[in-house]
Length: 114
Length: 115
Image (cartoon, rainbow over all chains, first blue to last red; front, side, top):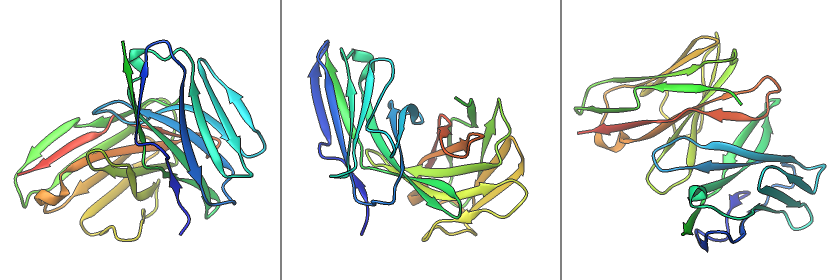
C-alpha cells in the first residue's frame, strides 16, 4: 500500500554539524508536506512545509528539499544545537473529501551531542 | 501558528471509568479539529476528525462508542474515553486546522494512564 516512511530511525550528530533527515513517500498524488519536531512528552511542533510545485524551501536554520521524481523529502538543519534533539516526523498531506489529512511517517530521533 | 491547549496534561484513572480530555483553540476559530493517539516511540495515529456542529468522522478501526468526540463550539472539542481499560493508556493529541485548511497545529498532548 501507499505509505510515508523514514530511512533512519536514529541520527546522532555533534553540536555544530549539519543534520539531514530523510523521508520517502509513495503516493504520487500528495502535494503538500510538513516537517514536525516532537520533544519528549509534548505535541508535534510545526517546523516547515513545502508544496509540490516547489523543490526547496528555506527557513531559519532549516531547509526542506523535495524530489518528486524519486518521491523523497529531506530536512536539513544547519549548525545543529542540543536543543534540536527531538523526534522529527514528515507528514504527507493527502486530500480527502476536499481537505488535507496528514499521514505521519515513522519518525527519526535526532540526538545532538555537545 | 495557532495556540492550542489541552486539559488535563496527564490523568490517571481506574479501569472502567470514563475520562474527558479537552482541546481548545486559543487564538482562532477552528472549524475542524483532529484527535490522535501515540504509543511510546511510535508515530501519531489519526483517530477522528471533529467538525464543529456535526458528527465526528472516525478512522477505520476506531470505536466511536468508546471514543466520544464532541465539537460544540469553534474553540472547543472534547474526547471522552468511555469505560477505559489499561490498553487505552496512551498519549492523546489534538490539532486544529488553520484558516487556509492545510496546516495543522498541535496541542501539547494528554498522557492517559489506566490502572
